[in-house]
Length: 427
Image (cartoon, rainbow, N blue to C red; front, side, top):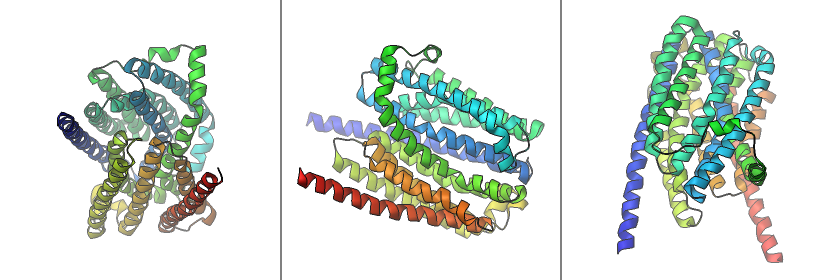
């Protein structure tokens, strides 16, 4: 009786914390998206396209670091607090130095990238490099707090960071255009990290330790985690790149003004992605490797909620397709209702893929890499090979490529199970 009561209290506590975290994250997502329509009225379509493209690259690269958020959650769930913090500090140290090296490479090749994406201001990539380095402690610290079930504090950090970015990006964009908007995002990110540090209420992985070289024992730990961490980086990296791949393709394939208009439409469709990702981060800490029945029920509930959310949003987009983009972004973005619906369908499929791949990743199933690869490869290759003539054809191609990826995964997963079953019988 007592054990049943304790389980019920823990379950109620989980739902309360998850609900508050979802509310705070939803507020943060709404404010985050308020930045884009607000800036669309400050910058012209070409400048807006440049701003969105740089943030798209940032989101793709920072999305890779979600693998390390998963690692932080796993460390907290596996080791005592002091040991988990020490191991998180090792990963954080490696991550900071890797991203310092990556940003140096990014700055070297930035002229080529700017040329391909038709971005004029070279300062934008300097700011992008600073954004990448600044985000490292936020990724490790939020994962660490989520592992300790302190998701409400992560939600407060999300809201504080987004409010800072919204205010400062709008202010600086009016003064200095695209670079000013990006500087505002950087300053808001730094203020959000400071807020997280102040409200954490517990010792976080130390940044100071990141400045010291790795010891022999730390190198041993790093080498021991390379395989699992490598799989996580590949899975999370491939799916993160797909989130804004349509914007990158648009910037490469179409004139700046056309790409700028499409970027605004894509940003609106991304609302579905971030709302769905909220669900993913609520679900993952509750996955239990020792309880498959609980996990299946959790997954069914998650997909049901995702489907309900998608139906509601898609219905709203269909009813308002002739006025939604024009009302939120400005007259230059009108007449794009059908493309918005296609872009939203692409984001829904991507969230569904991300949810299942991350679920498999937490359970340490090798099929997570199979799923990510099956979705990633056709989505990246198809638009580049087909060279579509307009943005509608491009997003339709991406949508069909994602569906093809799921078909390929279904076939590959079936073969994988047959092989495992045959091996089991022969042994």
